[in-house]
Image (tube, rainbow, N blue to C red; front, side, top):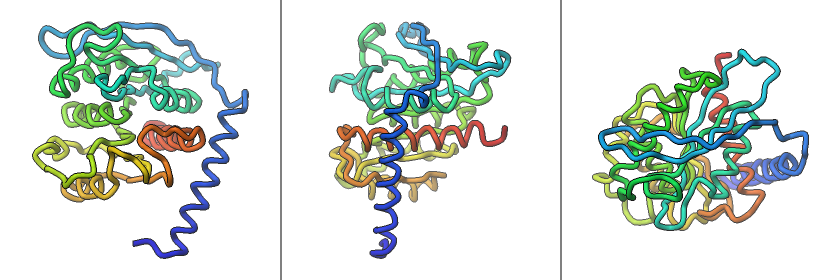
Length: 261
């Protein structure tokens, strides 16, 4: 348990981060020019549906430099989640600002993507298809690819990490553990995840439990950092807390993908 001094220091750091985040989101010079184009690609596996997405590439003076790439995974479509979700768009903005290419897409059966929703059983194949598509782009460094997801999408991204060892890192926002006692049978795939992980969850999250995330981290000996955002709910309704989330995700992934350059 944190001491009162540690709690005060954490609160002050988060308040400063929110101020910085709000400043960055309101400054025009903070926006990195990028080109964004609609794309489509098949999911992995047999009888794979064709998925709809958008690929954004940051503009660079050095045209020969291939950008690291991130696949973004949206929340549960049964609850209205699509690639246009505000949390997904917030992550996209900050990732582009740090020079990373971003592929966001709709899971099967969502918006313009073909197929039917698989209740989480088939959606990791959608993520694998997105990874394959992103790696094949000339403007993207296929050796520097990572994942990020929000809510349902964060679990699908983590499952894809268990299936694709070449993914370098994964950021999970609002990881949907619920607040009930952890049922480990639902999370056995984490035993196959070796990549560095970041878990970002609000202290007022209705569907994600920080103690449950820590329990999973310890049970499966994950290389994971757990970042609570004080006062944030599952939907990051506060613009400042949403911006803080986006900055933390972008900083974590840029460190993992650009740290050796």
